[in-house]
Amino acid sequence: MGLTKDYLRYVHVGACNAVGSANGCVVAIDGATCAVAACDNVNIYNLRTAEKVAHLDNEKKTVTAIKMCAAKKYLAIGYNDGSLRLYDRTAEDQGSFVSLIGHRSGVNCIAFSNDGLTVATGGKDSTIVIWDIVAETGIVRLNGHKDSITHLQFTQNDRFLVSSSKDTYVKMWNVESHSCFYTVSDHRSEVYSFALLKHDSLLVTASAELELLVFDVHWIGGGKKQSADPSDPSSKKQKTDEMVEMRPEEKDDLANRFVRVSLRGRLLRQSSGRALQLCVSADERLMLCLGSGQVIDIFRIYTDDETAKRVTKKLRKAKRKANESKDSSSSTAPTAEDVAQDVTTKIGRIGEYRALKDKVKWADFAPLATEGSIVARKDVEDEEGEEEEGK
Image (cartoon, rainbow, N blue to C red):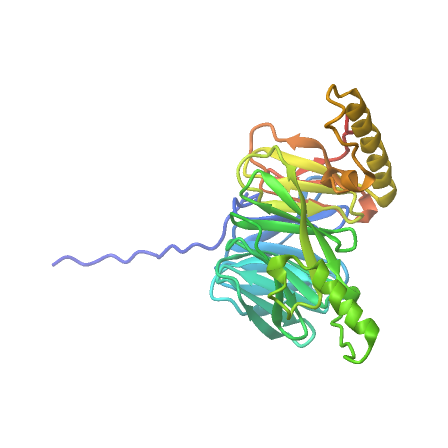
């Protein structure tokens, strides 16, 4: 019997030249740098020189989500094993982090509160976990969705949390009572992203459909639950008015005393496939819609003054068409209220960004220091500017 020969064992220790991963994302840290998910690492690039200036590595976990907190300069990174790492960008040791584990599977999305003291994570296990960053512990686990969580956002001074999921629902949660008080069920396919606009009075949702749904959101009493005195006549009148504002399907849900949501309209997009992401600029002037192809739809969010001008213009045009109609007896003149209900008076598509050959995977706006600039990832692309609407 011959002697056996021993060989050295080869193990994987890392990867090189990985600019970005297919299932990763990009986030703008400031006007000069951005962070890009690259397999198990996060690369930080200088946008002006297009050079990698730093990286945050993890030997065994794949990056699935990245989020930057502007208030406290935290960089949150979610991994496919359900863990979350928080890096303090202002610390002397940029490699130090706080690790939080709360999901049974990968982290899909991350959202910071406005004060930067709380962070929420949504996972593929259909659960939402709210974390206390100061105490480095979990606060509560929210159960209610039946599929992967796709997007999260705090609203109304961090009192509420809005979530979307592949189960076709958008849910609104009370952070204090840890309960869901409203569910938007108007979608027929998976909801991949949403955006709250105009002081949280408009809700835009993106799904697998070719249209973006726009909802009017009315927060009752600024989102505070009304504790009315039964003997007060004014409180009875307020309760009656709230019942009138409800849709028929909402009147059965008497526990909802925070919000009224109604479908306002739909916005047609040109990007093919599923609408995977909605990205809003910090000044709420532009909104990007990313599909599964090479096209990014660019929408303009109009101010109140611009909306009033558009309503006047559309009303004048509608009246002119009504006067030119041959059958003037059957045509009714439109009113300002009818024209104001048109969703394009508040949000309108003004153009698109089209990649040459590669699919666009993720996009993010830089902070207001470089207002209007876009950080988009084919790998890493810069896009600036805006097209005027011509009609």
